[in-house]
Image 1 (spheres, rainbow, N blue to C red):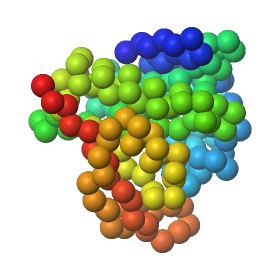
Image 2 (image 1 turned 120 degrees about the vertical axis):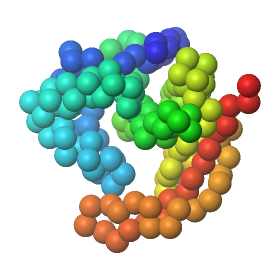
Image 3 (image 1 turned 90 degrees about the horizontal axis):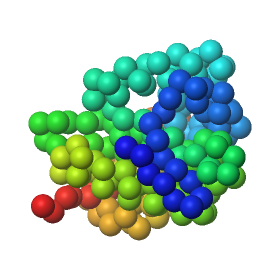
Image 4 (image 1 turned 90 degrees about the vertical axis):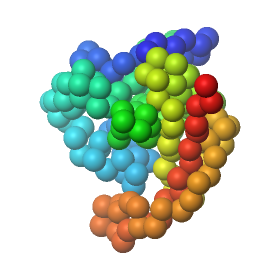
Length: 179
């Protein structure tokens, strides 16, 4: 999938993105640490990030997950990531995980990115249901879900355990493709 706007573009994560991905994750460590601890732990150094990208590429090739970058058109820096994960081909569903750097928040880029990636998931991958799972205090993430017509389904009790904390409830939002 590739997608372009006047301000940013989306493309699959590539090996030559290692330095820019590492910079995004390290510079936003505080912002991402609660909900993306695994991704952060796999990208502590540039060498870690190179290994992470090689692993992501293999996972994309096997169609188990898809990882996309959101890039600033002017600087070509990585502004954020979208990961389509937990793909269940038999049930035709997947979950989105995403993040955007502090410098790029509030511009609507993630909302447009999820919209474009959802369209790709439905029309090109033939998925029928997409999910966003977020904590109720992650207002920006909930706004992205709602602006893309994802509908709240239920609270998932003790769904996620942040590093060094007790399990927390998460909110499940879904978008169903009507053929």
